[in-house]
Amino acid sequence: MAEETIFDKILAGEIPADKVYEDEHVLAFRDINPQAPTHVLVIPKRKVSHFTEFPERPAEEAGILFQRAAHVAKELGLEKNGYRIVVNHGPHGQQSVGYLHVHILGGRQLSWPPG
Image (cartoon, rainbow, N blue to C red):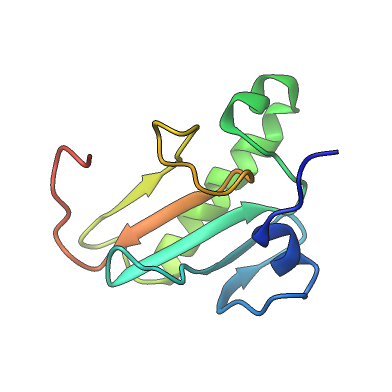
């Protein structure tokens, strides 16, 4: 079994989170270390540890995760001026939690390149 992470504990209700959206597939909550005025994480409720696990999973899981991220961004009012969706993978990609999550960043002009 994969290592238990802070996101597992949030899903289990062991650690509180500032939730902005939840359904049977995902949970979205505000990042505790925001990098933009709006910084929300969207996690699948069926755990995926790393982005590279998606080829072995049903394609619908990836689709649902990104559909829900788009829905959350719209609900947060980010659609008009734009926002960034980020998925970090591995140490060079700055993945700090072994649980796949989508970052929604917005509310200000973002720079490019990002890293």
